[in-house]
Length: 386
Image 1 (tube, helix red, strand yellow):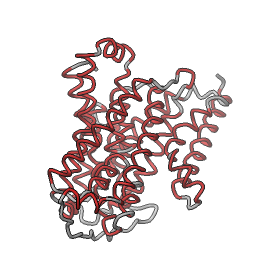
Image 2 (cartoon, one colour; image 1 turned 180 degrees about the vertical axis):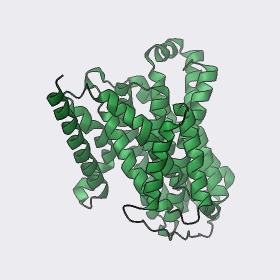
Image 3 (cartoon, helix red, strand yellow; image 1 turned 90 degrees about the vertical axis):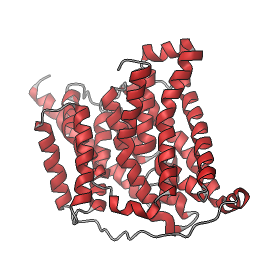
Image 4 (spheres, helix red, strand yellow; image 1 turned 45 degrees about the vertical axis):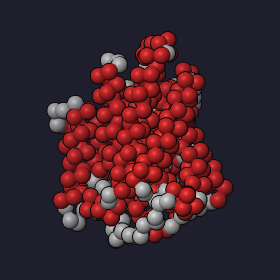
């Protein structure tokens, strides 16, 4: 390809990146009721992945995809992980301790454990399916779901890169994940509206609410948080570590900065995390090839089983811990729905609990990658070689 053509491709890619970034951000902030209904079923972050992929039908981006992938993995992903982890305010965790936190962690545990159990059951009783999953790498679609359900888009992308989930399979994961989570959200809206009645039947006493002092404000565009995020992403590139080591060290450093620097603005860090996550998804979209895409029925079946056992597990622990059943919906949505839907579901019950839902969602974002690594470890130890 000539230099002029190469320049045209790069310019086209830059225009597509900026346009997609603006569109996704606009959809996330829209107040239009029709667009809100539309994005309830097709989340804006999905368009960050799909638009660049459709762009490949018009412009041949193949020659620059390796460079885009290198930039994303070397700079964007470390910056996104760092900013998410630095958004966790550990000092606020005491406001939801201990029962809601225990219920939340119980939900995270079963989400991360079920892939291992499902693969184990397949190996014992459905050998042909198990061998097919190994030969086609279909099991690699399960790990990004763990990251998505616990940590959100950042963890999902990081875990995809760690185990190298095939891009067509990753698109299937995104679609199945979004549909399943939206159905679950509808169910949780119904649950939390009836939670007082459920508490009466279960003999659970409603606890007194406590409010968080959420006094953090977003900083200016060129804030100290942004400068630190940029500086760290550049520094991390020059450090001699593997991708996995980088993710672990970045996570720990982000939490320490949030905990040890009194003036660190966690809310502003999360704002930049949102932009970075969109960019990472856009860069991943350039790699997607629709010609090899399909939705495996076995993956759909696994996700359905996954949801059923998750529901039974957290329902049992809500009863055993004697936690007001509204927390079942709040903690579950903090895991599966994230920072956008968990407060919305909570508001249908009690707006005073919304800060708690946000806090648990941030905790979910901060721990999603670690739970995914835990899942990978046990799959690797017990069943397959990664």
